[in-house]
Every structure is written in C-alpha cells, then in structure tokens.
Length: 358
Image 1 (tube, rainbow, N blue to C red):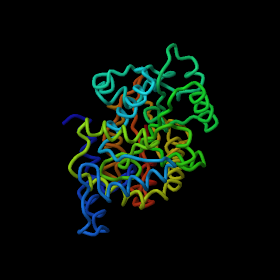
Image 2 (cartoon, rainbow, N blue to C red):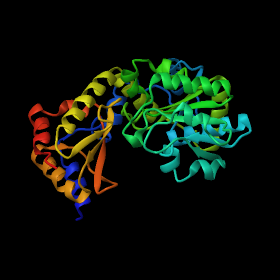
Image 3 (cartoon, rainbow, N blue to C red):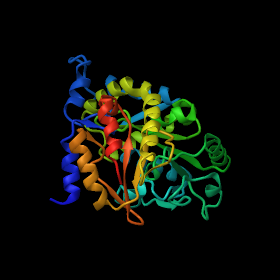
C-alpha cells in the first residue's frame, strides 16, 4: 500500500473529522425523510408542488424573481453562461484561471457550448475590476466565484464587488455568481445572501457543500432567464422524472444549517490560528474569510503523510485523506468547517496540534 493509500485508509478509520458535516452515507437522506409526509406527491419532470415550492423559497431568499432546481451545479452554470452568450450574440466569457469550469469539467463549456473563456487576472489572487477593464476582447458575461476555492477561499472586498457590478452594468456585461459557497461568506461580508446576490444578474448556489445535502443546485435570476434555463435543463437531461430525494435533503439541511454559518466561520478562524502556531505549517489565507481554508506544510507529501497517519491513529480524528503536492516540495489540503468539528472532544482536538510537528 502506498503512503497516499495509507493516509486515506487511516482517515476513513477515524471516529471524528475536522472537516464537513459528517459522513456522506445513506443516513443523510434517511434523516431528511423523517420529517416528510410519506403521502407527499413527487415532482415529475420539473413540475409539482415539492420542486416549485422549494424553487420559490430559494428565489425569495436570494432576492431573485425565479429559480430553477438542477441536479448539478456543473449543468446549471454551463447553461447560465450559454444563455448570456446567446443574449449578447457573443460566445466569449471571462472567469478566474482556476474556476471550476476551467479545471474540473473536462472542458464541458467549450466542447458542449462552444463558448470561449478568457482567463481573468492571475491564478494566485482574486479577480479585480481592473482585470475586467483590461480584457483584450469584449465578453458577454463575467463569472465570479465567491469564495475562490482553489486559492483557499479568498474573497474580494465588498466595495470591490460593488465596483465590478457597476462596471459590468454600465458596459452591458452580464455578471454571474458561482455561489456554491455563498451561504458561507455572509459572516465575513456582514451582508445577507440577498444583498450579495443583488450585485449579480444570475446566481448559482449548491446544497451539498456547506449545507450538506445529497446533491443539487439552484440557478436564480429574472423570469425570462429562468424560463430559458428550464428549456436548457431539459436539453441537458436534467429533468429526471423525479428529483425529490435531492430536493427534500436540500430543504431539510438548508433549514438546519443556514443559521450556523457564523459559528462555522468563527471555528474556522480558531482552527487556522492553531494551525499557524505549529512550526512548518501555515494556512491560506492566514485568517479565513469563510468556513474554508487551505492548510500548507513546508515539506513534501511523503514526509507529511506519516505524521497525519499517526495523528489519525492516536487521536481518532481525521484531518484529511489526501495531500496535494505544491511547488517547492510543499503540500497541503483543504478544510471546510461544518457540524463535524463540534463533535470532537476538546482533549483530542488539542492533541492534534501537539502531534503536528512538521
């Protein structure tokens, strides 16, 4: 067994986890179903009370006219960008070099929609209004991911967001929000989801990350936009005969966790402080701006894996099941705070940082 497999195996054997909301097992759906009337009719091909009520609920929460439930965010965002490209008769859009659409979707946007992305700014920082002004070509839409996951969940200032939004509106550029983690940034900005969404023409949100549902996404905007999105959803095969397992879990965990984002944020800042106090360890960003951040080690993965494996075995707490190699013989992992960390006994949590000698 390779060291990386040993690390994953040791992580899977732990009782507690630093990250997320708990195990992703069948109980996630079972718990959600307990609160539902078994006689409630399912949705059928995108219609019915169960899906329409949830779409209306989230549209209102985001301050948008309408919303459409999708089985995946990948589908929702490719469709949003296609709609804006068609509206402007311009197949060029702009996003960060490490956008999910650029590095995790096998070029789906380019292959399926023939949309040409222009990379906005540089990989190590968040995009700015100046980056948008300096684009060499006109674009139909700019996509902003808040927070920017691949660089530790960094965020622009809210004033910068307002400046970007104003510039796009004055110059006929649509602004789309990749808000997979929108819920988690409200404590930092001290703004509601509605106030943040107001700066954007369309908004995508996820229900399996900070919310912890099974899967599923919402795409929200004005009625004309969502009407087109429904047509594209059918074209993509996203109108399954029923989506209610995803909708029920999304609704249940939304209600359960939407009020906990401040708690997750404060816990993330405390954990980051403790990681940064360990020699040879730092977090990116140093002070988190949401419930997620990256933990970086000043040694290569093969040197860090045995240390984390030992921590897993001795504390029963899983830090991470993987390490991503980084430049200059360093490595790291991503940590997203949810309900799970609150289950860890204080003594075992303290022990992690006592053993973390890099």
